[in-house]
Length: 92
Image (cartoon, rainbow, N blue to C red; front, side, top):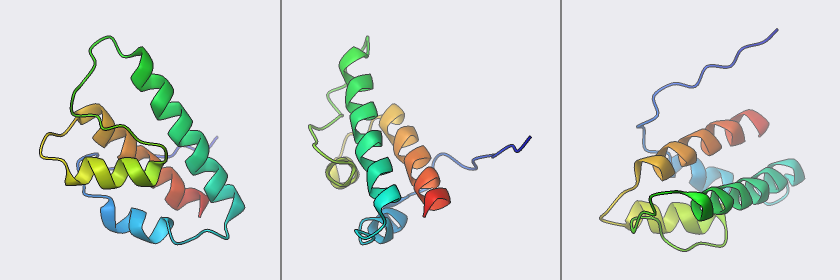
């Protein structure tokens, strides 16, 4: 059995996402990012406490850009983006 441990969930992952978003030729990575975007949108729709800090987005790239440039942050989104970046690193 393999166990993967994800580290600090508060790190700034923008620099890593900048590299990930340039890898348009990696079909598996692009598929993961599309599925991750769908999952985050689905979770946002069913949240019991809607947060005004969560911007509208179509892709993970849009979410990263809008959330990181926002003054008001959402802890759940930050954690989700950190996990997505770590899985993207693992996949890539």
